[in-house]
Image (tube, rainbow, N blue to C red):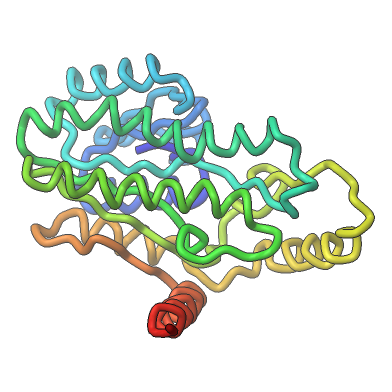
Length: 261
């Protein structure tokens, strides 16, 4: 599991250990994971991993197999949100968003999947977002990275299915985690007067939503752990009333547009 030191990743790790699973929890700091998960359960193992380092991902995968014997489930969770209007976000920040959310996630999959293919068994749980299905003003860059994750995993899962490796894309709405505060989310730094009022309104929305999100991360974590133990896993899990509303509206819009001549 990646990104296990806080937020949804921490809750999934806790739920998995509580369910009797053995977990290799990773984050950029192994100490942060141990502190977040309150220490030393004998079924909880921790390693440091920066997912943007492909060599490190391969080393962690190899050490996990050496310690635990196999990897049955990969939870590709690590990521962050680059928020703000597109033109206010510097090119380097856009590229960093993709480096973490897409290429980092790919690094971990490349490291783990060969062990799953060898055993003809495994499940890849990829934490996406409803923003990987629907974009909005202020979320264009973050959504772009998650749209890319969705497209990659939709195709990759079809390549893996004949080899016994399954896939679950998780698409939550807004969860009550620290994902939208300054420890995780980042905002554009370029001032453009044409966007000033809209950006101020968007920042006020984010500040007001932080800590008041409708989704329960513990409930989602329990759902993911339960699905991971099942033989038949859905391709997607859209979680939360807000996510289902947004995804449903997008589907309705697409049906109208596809039907139009």
